[in-house]
Amino acid sequence: MIELGGTPKTAPASEHIVDGTDATFMQDVIEVSKTIPVIVDFWAPWCGPCKTLGPAIEAAVAKADGRVKLVKIDVDANPGIAGQLQVQSIPTVYAFFNGNPVDGFQGALPPSEINAFVDKIVALGPEPDNGLDDAVAAAEEMLANGENADAVETFAAILSEDGNHAVAYGGLVRAHLALGEIDQAEAVLNGAPAEISTHAALEAAHAQIVLARKAAGAGPVDELRAKVEANPDDHQARLELANALLANDDAQGAVDQLLELFRRDREWNEGAAKTELFTIFDALPPKDPIVLNGRRKLSSMIFV
Image (cartoon, rainbow, N blue to C red):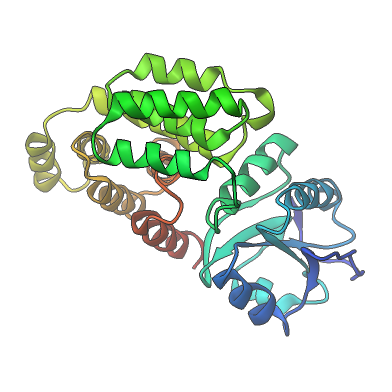
């Protein structure tokens, strides 16, 4: 990352990749994010890492074909919004949805991580039309009704029609997890084609497998809750309580415990609370209220 300073210069723009300013931020970012996700790239023309990050994130956004917008803001020419968001070094990237910041990172990332980040943000927005949507919806309904073996067959049938259907791969993983077949779920994920490996559905599937393995070794909720109540600064007990709550299908409770852990000591155990929160956010549907509210609360702790 490079400390702020330098000479302003105009960056190129296109239909879904535009130059933003302090004056247009509300319209370009906040208002648009109520319809589709918006990624904001804070940059400057003299910033070396920005020259690497910029083209990579533009390419990833272009592949999304209008499902996400990229707004590039030159911090030298537009210091107002950067100051409000406490941007102290560049490149810094924030993502907005429904008018709120939902994710972000600082510094240049390798292309694979940039693609994964953009895919995750794209998944917050409306799903694209797909000829197999009805079959996917039917399989999802089977899962919701506990008809897990039937869901496995249906998702597998979808993949026989479209071997690159990332959503079906993710669904097949979840169906195996619902049957308690963690190893089989991981085998399915590992067998997905490389070209869709960074799709949000597969990122979510990976996170779900990680959580499933943690939940399998979780202790009793009541005992762990008692330990936390006896000593609120027992961070290990609070982390284990979050995993136990996940094992009991209480994702909201787990998120609440992890947010409290982050509030008490964000650096504990190499930022374990934040890491686990992002794993839960990745595992749940992007528009789940637990995810949206949890990301907003975490963002308020990080960025404000």
